[in-house]
Image 1 (cartoon, helix red, strand yellow):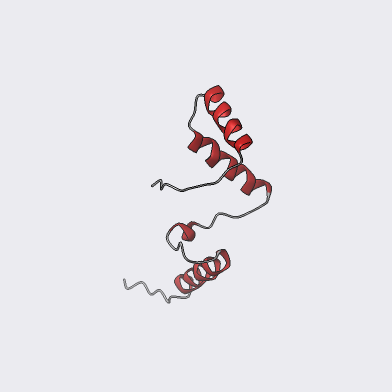
Image 2 (image 1 turned 60 degrees about the vertical axis):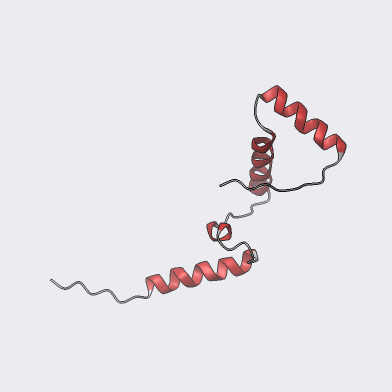
Length: 82
């Protein structure tokens, strides 16, 4: 689900964004999404799926919560009754 956001960008960035959108025949949204993805990969940032549901958590808090969920899931005793 996409959500609207407000950004303040330098005029030169807006001009570049508009040019890219026209030249690549794509939306400004797609260009920004791809740029953020590229930046994230270049800086070795990990994408934590939990963050999309826990918007108020910081990255490390979400990581801890996710690890707790994984640990709890893996620590359950499983007994198969045949």
